[in-house]
Image 1 (cartoon, helix red, strand yellow):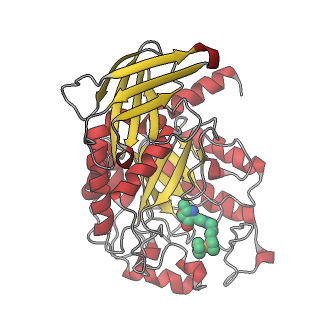
Image 2 (image 1 turned 45 degrees about the horizontal axis):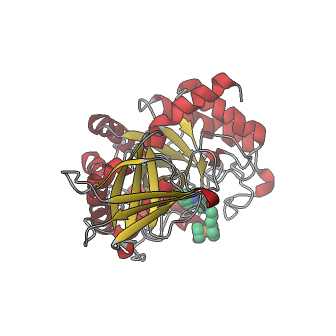
Length: 415
Ligand code: H79
């Protein structure tokens, strides 16, 4: 990449790298069946039959203000919502395809428009998921593995018919009808050529030069602004160079499923988030609203409880950089800012004295993030030259001051 392009790319992604935590929303026509977003393929539902579900899709309870409010209370800084998933149903007013929520349902409203306005008001970035290669509704979309083979004949597929007449025009609509879009989240690009992926990136940039694009736009490496890891995948320390995220489910489904009650706890969300952020990544955490337009109560409960911890400890999360120690620490994790280090101590590892090895900077002050008076914690720092060994010892109060994970702030000399 040219230096100038690299500078632009770094500038473009800054907000996202500072944000750390986003809300993924899987919401579509599939919610009417309450069996996840793959139900059409899993049950081989014919297109004509699937289209009929739209006539009953009337999510009267949808309230953009409430949804954005949940994201805010959870401490999330952006929302990525499915504008079109693999079923091909557009959750916005598309002019190029009538199979959309405004033209094909009794609901008749454009939830993306309402979300765009609300996100603007509440200071959250709106982003769209768009299934650019899989589209079970369109006769000519072609994916390596996941075509609609129950209605359509593979031999008769003319991919560019789909690509030029549906995918690209819809992406253009999403980039021109809803104001500034934070990022476009593409998925399952199997079969898309390198040339077509690169052209799509240019196509997006031609409408919104600052819109980020995730790596799943292509199966070819190094296309897009940042890497989306596998679903629910958290990499090891030191594995990554560039920006990345983990897309994660709150239970075991993306789209709403009435059978799935296996929920992660607020504690587990916080631990996973701290782990991800200490490795320099973002957490994109999913909710799957119902056909009525409601984010499941249990999701809201878990998110709000996690949000309370984040609210108290946000200084050690937002705008931080990855741990300089490229390995697992025995008591928890580290994030940094200029002249500052945050030690995220798992409460079950809380002890009389915490030890940190390998920190070369002099520690000017140590205190608990939970202590508004910032009272000094006693520290000892030593260095054994013969074995190049730095040890920092911090005396801790008897009880961990916060839930799940408690944070110690170190003010450092130098960066
Ligand atoms: O949007 C979510 C998934 O629907 C989508 N990516 C996340 C973010 C996704 N598309 N394809 N895949 C994931 C991989 C395909 C997985 C499958 Fe299956 C395994 C398809 C059939 C078997 C999972 C299990 C879906 C249906 C059953």
